[in-house]
Length: 269
Figure 1 (cartoon, rainbow, N blue to C red):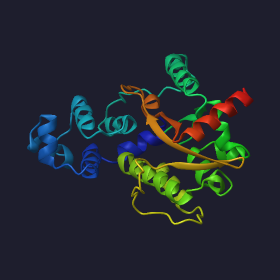
Figure 2 (tube, one colour; figure 1 turned 30 degrees about the horizontal axis):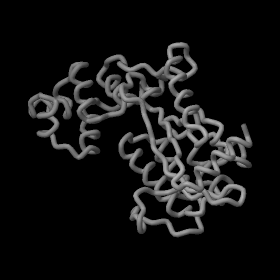
Figure 3 (tube, rainbow, N blue to C red; figure 1 turned 90 degrees about the vertical axis):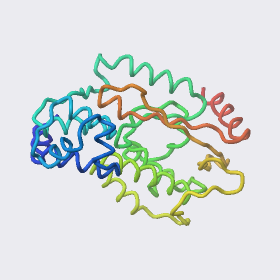
């Protein structure tokens, strides 16, 4: 963690930060005190700065408020303690098992597309089938999955239901901003909202007849393909990098798309 981040964390008292997270989660002092097994009076004193919380108390409150690991470290710094969670580069030898697990998931998902992104939606890794989405897109766009998808020079012209898919992605990002309070993600959301879209963008995702998920309808070399996606994260992360990895896997939503992807893989492979 940089000196700048450490200084920024110390500029705001830990009580103020905890109160902000509690407000963001819409949890009352009483409810948080009960779930964290502390007195409401003690919690009030912590939030107002009249009492300094112990390291264990900061970690306990961060857990019950579902504060992301990165932000729990900042809470600890603001309280005068060292960070509890490491942030290890994915290329580090200690991350070998994580890299192998990711590669196994990506390879096992072939011939269907799958990609791994970090907390900022930057592309970390992908399998070969993602190539059908990004073919012909400028490399500088493909570094960020959301930009690659919604930018007019990216996937957007090939997405048949761009308005619907755009609303889905912006909704996901908006919820992520609310959960993490990450200013970088807020800036990305503002940038993406500024991209043009020639289709109506629904304010609320309402299913059409027979729909049970938001589909991605993508045109590839003259053929219309339909996908749905799932998102996976590591279930027991204790490292900031691991906690922030997301694996998005696309599945064919109809037999024609499945057959096309199998045939394409056979040709390319």
